[in-house]
Length: 453
Image 1 (cartoon, helix red, strand yellow):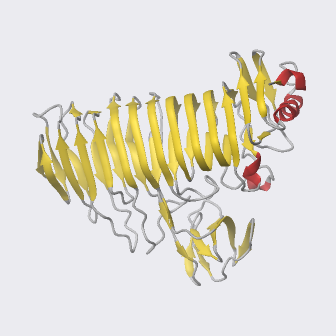
Image 2 (cartoon, rainbow, N blue to C red):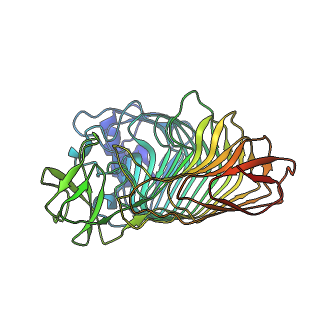
Image 3 (tube, rainbow, N blue to C red):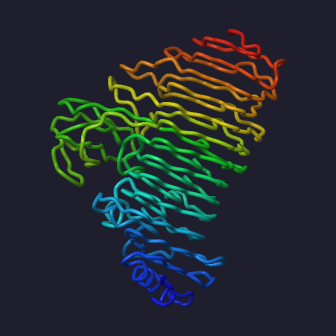
């Protein structure tokens, strides 16, 4: 056991001295304790290695201080810089005060910042990560609270996160739990982004086998985004003459490359194949960034279970099964093979907000969606078409079991042209409730009234 104060981590020290002291304390791993309450300034990042457990006592606060020389994360794992896995990292009891400091302020010109990794607590290439009893009430507009990508076996438990940006942001990985969360964020409380903006995930791929349980979307005056964004993407091999825009992805020389250009909606004609092995390089006026080794053509989410979710914030959309299509990113490149997001379960989702126009909006293909023991108001499901050349949508299978329908709604399920849904409703809690469907919706069975619109 190590006591951080023994290494010089003290309330009376400045942020630079404290960062250096805490870095010394965590070197070599082990159990490190911050055992005295108070506000500790920190002005530099702390890099964590294998078998490291960091414990903050009740009343201890970590306050970011601006560093004019070099901006970095608060915590990051050492393997993030070499793409080698770290194992067995735990942070318990962290109360973070962001204090207006933005990790990515200097952008990708800083050697500290990995392209696409932008959380105050950032972990990239990590196995067996736990973040417990984490609090933050002032997330600034640029950075996520917790950002994790290329992972296996993550537990995030007892979270209270408020502010402007995503509270918890996942990139590709397998096996995770987010449990007991209170969120009040302007942007998405939870983002499951297999695909993403070029500056918002360092690698692309599938997010699999996750449980999000006992989480609250707390009410707030203003909002954007969704309670959860479930984001997919698809791309193709590079070919001469293809037209690309910011964040487009291509496969070339057994690597993934992405267009790293300004957010201006401009399109570019690519004539020269990107072939460099790392970093960024300009070809034909286009800056291409190497994202990862290996060939893959799609990303998304599968086997995700939402359980005991309480929606208190007024939103246009609560859950988005998502494709991007804007000046920041387009998830689906024309004629790519579309990924089908798989097996999404929503259990005991309770709508408490006055207004959630759409409980679920899907614009990416999805196969099976289950609603188990949910409590709904006048909330609809909308299946949309991204309207890009070459995309084909399979039929989505919808199951409602034990759902309580509290308020009438004119259209419950709507499928736009090119999309379709097959619906079963069993053991519903209000057999007098009635609504209609629009578009290519087939009701296989229902113990409520669902009429064609």
